[in-house]
Length: 144
Image (cartoon, rainbow, N blue to C red; front, side, top):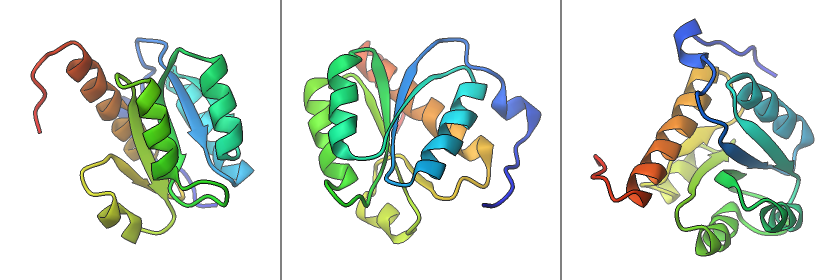
């Protein structure tokens, strides 16, 4: 896996204890995302497939963000996200894929390319998605 790079200012711990569910069918990627996000102050849960993700969501109503792979064998990430948001419309979703073309298919949704080479990109994308979701939930105007 490639080395992780980041600027010190971009990886300062988050001031809140938001919970992120990371879903990817590759355990090493879940472990890397979990480690990086925990370093930034987030509470992180992981799941290796949609079944585990749905169980985690049912047992943890505090999940603030779903970070999901787009291509998984049992259920595509966009379908998992649709299910997740139906029950938690105030939450955020960030998609990730090792295939950059998926970003075009999911235009308008936060997207991270795998592997996570730049920690600051992962963290800033997650923070922006959480900020956007919190702002929309509170009724505050959100910049496009």
